Amino acid sequence: MSASTSASVPTREVARRAFAAEFNDATYTFKESDDDRAPVYSLLPTGERANRVFVVGTLTETEDVGDDSEYWRGRIVDPTGTFFAYAGQYQPEATSVLRETETPAYVAVVGKPRSYETDEGDINVSLRPESITVVDEATRNRWVVETADRTLDRIEAFETADEYAAMAETQYDPDLSIYRDQVIAALEDLEDDAEVAAEA
Amino acid sequence: MTDLRQHADEIHEQFSDTLDVGVDEIHSRLETLVSEYRVPIDEARRSVVSTYLEEADMDREALAGGASQSASVADVDAPEEWLDLTVKVVDLWEPGADSIAQVGLLGDETGTIKFTKWAKSDLPSLEEGSVYRLENVVTDKYEGRFSVKLNSSTTIEAIDTDIEVGDDSTELEGALVDIQSGSGLIKRCPEEDCTRVLQNGRCSEHGDVEGEFDLRIKGVLDDGNGIHEVIFDQESTEELTGITLEEAQEMAMDALDTEVVVEEMRGLVLGQYYRVAGPTLGRYVLADEIERLDGPTETESVLIKARSI
Image (cartoon, rainbow over all chains, first blue to last red; front, top):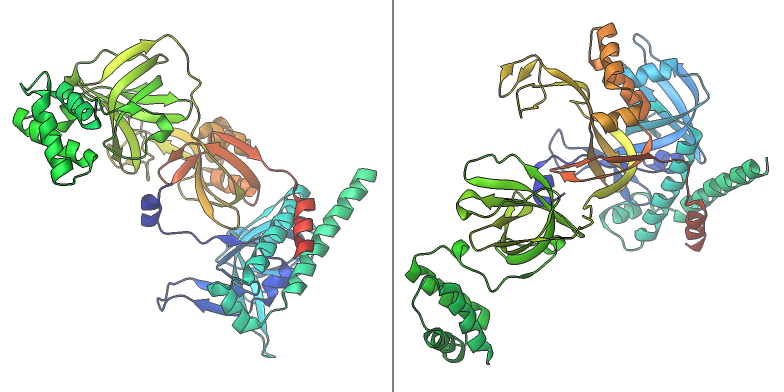
């Protein structure tokens, strides 16, 4: 793909890979221009902007929390924590998956980070799905390793302090060893599973 | 023989058919530029050739080479270079204009490249699947893609051998994160050589037509660092989804809506990891080969990386 052709096409936002624990810590959001339609980014504490994420985990619970119309909440669990996905009438396909999927099930979600302030003044980060699909365990495990790898890449690059690493430093002053330890725990968990499977 | 003398000889050779000019005269012109005016030899040669081109009222294109050199298809990285290629005719296409005698695809071990042969050049016919030594072809660039042109100075020699044509395909890996509009069960214009996708039963070129059903997916592969747009044609779409064109038509007929097909496909392929390979067409990679990716293979090495930080 040459630069000249891709420049004329509006660029699609990359779906970042982050574990739930880091995703839920990404409470700071920003825009890069004053345009109303400019994309909103969540700032990942390991130093990357995210307008879209791709997550795979176990859908453990779904509930219609809407008052007048359907508004579904899904809890999607990964080795580090829980993603909260919310889908309503403007996400009809995702809504129907949350309504109809029998839990527990492995699901893959492409979605946008959304943050809101609670009555107590805390910022909660949730996921607004563009798509939810039921996947198998192999896909889930592949995502865990891929997300571990991408997270480590961000941690390793943090020192070189690009724009978003510097922003994360200012906004969060993050303890990167926590995210590193979560990556290690997630991978060790997978290795243990593989050993159990091999012995069985 | 000095370098200058050699250049003079080559230029003399190029114009021997058209101009009555002696090697000595050419040599002295070159020498003036190089020795007196400190012009680099390449530039000096270009300048002298231009002078004679004007004198002979010729295009640079029509000039017999001498400066061309043997190259591989993958070496082509600039327009207006004169090259010699040893290539197999991979594909011949229907010429789109009377001025074109033949058009198609040439290939060698390093890849493939489009070629055009002009009708006015009056060259022998190339046959599909045969290997030729083509001397003095000129490169061209259009919309970011290179091609070669055969012209009246090109020599064509058939060679009794075969070439394993290299594929210049791109390989991509990632999660399929989106299926774009215009995917699923679509209708194409049935007019000859048209195949445009119909919008509400209309072809942008031929108006209202009775379309022909086809399957395709325009998807987005995302590896967390970047995205790539991929097209799956009918065969690839059937392989990817397990839904055949016939089944898709039945589904659409039962539902009285073609959209049910793409909705079904979304549920089957979104969020899955794939590796695809194929040629690049504009902003898309055409997925000729598809592999659904299974569980992780890098767990151990990523764990080592994590512990080393």
